[in-house]
Image (cartoon, rainbow, N blue to C red; front, side):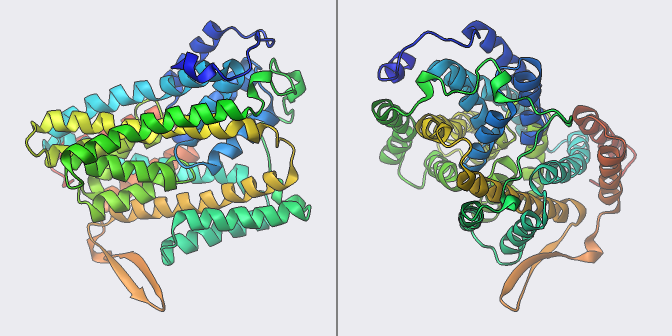
Length: 466
């Protein structure tokens, strides 16, 4: 397939001195170390590719990241595809994107088998009880990390607050929030306001590693320049790969089959869920739990805990959602067989479009580096995403800390509120401890997750209710 996609691309010898074999080894390291959600994964890529290997510069890295934040789907995987493509054309993007997903897919598949077979065992429930508290702390940390980079002034803070209010109180569709933020950023960038140019690095030092100092250099590689024939070819190939399985399922089994429902739902998700993993999860949780009934709110948090404790994109949790949906509605198939097929299908239709978005748009986005109007739009969108992630944190907190949550309506708004008498003191105490460990003691991701899981298991063994 790589040969087919590269047939219409400009051919040239690599001039940056980075061998493809060396790049593959680095992408394996990225995949193995990519724990902790998109914030952690982006930091890992920045450390390896910008600071350690010095393959690309700070400005190019942030330009690519802001473009990926604009796209539907997981921005960390898309960033890997983008940089892999910049370095080694189509095969570079394919390898970087596939390796980024593979470890998480295999890990969550194994954990899903265990969860489906033993999830109702008390000790397992105790482990996940503790894990939920840690996950809530991790989501809050993501708000802080991304907010620190994106909310550099009062305008960006105002956009984030407005996004939170719109989605939490008025249930405004996320794509509309992104569109509005992008338009505001376009206007701000066009008038030349410095408040819409918020950049910033990940390394925390005063020096910004310039593009000119990197192995790739400041100029755009020949293969990364816009080429209409290649763009049409790549878009056609990936559209067929993405949508053909969906069409076959609908044609053979009809729209009411569980696999057809999963294929259609997650294909829609791939097109309309913007802003990365945490933003996507708010949409998936509401639809999978409340509309389809594939799993319960607590189980959504269990799945998120799995994704947090395994390498790869955090949005890999959707694989668990599809797995459990088919496991409980297998039709004529064995439940485990149906669940396995659903896990593969969910992963396919969720992550394959990411290659399409990058290969189709990245050549044109590369020509816009340094464009103030585009930078303004991308900066405003990143700020709006912070507000959406905060919405997800509140949604999780309500379902972790309270046994009952109801919807209050009035004055033109509808908002989820807790039944205060249903508060769970053990969950509140463990969540508080996780937050202190995360923000006060700066506990590492794996240590936090394992510690909270162990605390939940001990609570269960001591006779506590989970």
